[in-house]
Length: 379
Ligand SMILES: [Ca+2]
Ligand SMILES: [Ca+2]
Image 1 (cartoon, helix red, strand yellow):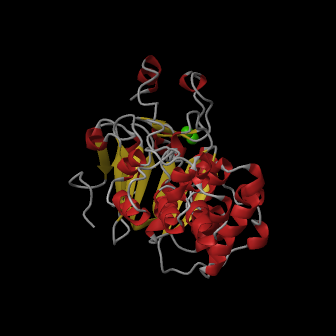
Image 2 (cartoon, helix red, strand yellow):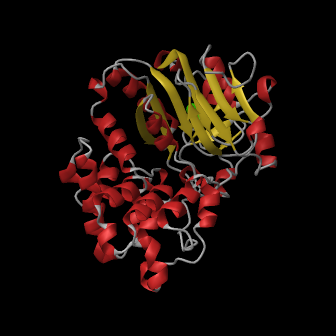
Image 3 (cartoon, protein in one colour):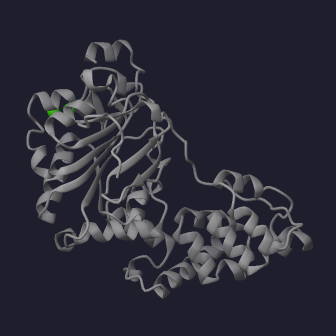
């Protein structure tokens, strides 16, 4: 796609499907006719969306009456519920909310849940969650995250400025630790480097917790960085490579996109659709044509992979001028995963060989450049 056609069709490929995976809704109630154990089992065989539907019934919160409090007052039931949906902690009596196992199951899984609790109970619940983390033998800088507010500051100090891109306290701790100790991580696991945009007008990169998924796979040392310009992105690549002392295995670039570009720091629409185009704000085909990413091959493993988490970077497939092919040409032999239409990621699996298996909202339009069969690699 040329700049002219981009301009003449300004909406092509720009809108990422947002809000595809929002946080779970608040559980309001649950059918109370079953004993707690049976009720919990019933939920566990359902899909997440079915579960959430089932948690709309007749129980309510502990404060809404004797019968409705029966299930939520049962510790085992409560623990199972917060594992299904962390927001269930908001329905519990204070003494259950500060049970370390329950607080840990909810808050460590999704830290933003703390904001749904009354202000006066947050500190106690947060402390209980940290007690749980400590009791599991996890090493973490507790003195820096003693309160939720301190944790937020810790995230910002660690370069995680878009906190809603993350769910799990464990993810944040691991990514922050990797940033500080990249030089001494060892070589047991390949490096996954996520370079994420600072320009996200519709919060598209908060809908699917991709960094959480990479960390939870256990297959990578995950490094997360934010960049506003192509120069910053290039510096992050080189710095990560040099500090770690080894190439990057999995490179994820996250930013709103079109067929020929991925945006790191441009203004929100409609200004971002109008010339003059900012060269620095976008990684584009023309940057590759001008040799600006000529050294990319040094930084990415020969057996590595690239994920372009962006709209339309694979539009037109193998025969088109698109950003996926530009990356593929610069990185012979690596798979470059993209999607050919405006879309967003809804799921991510990591194979035993650390290969990414991405599910897009428009999965039939996935395009993997550099892969002879243009099909997902089987692990
Ligand atoms: Ca550029
Ligand atoms: Ca440039």
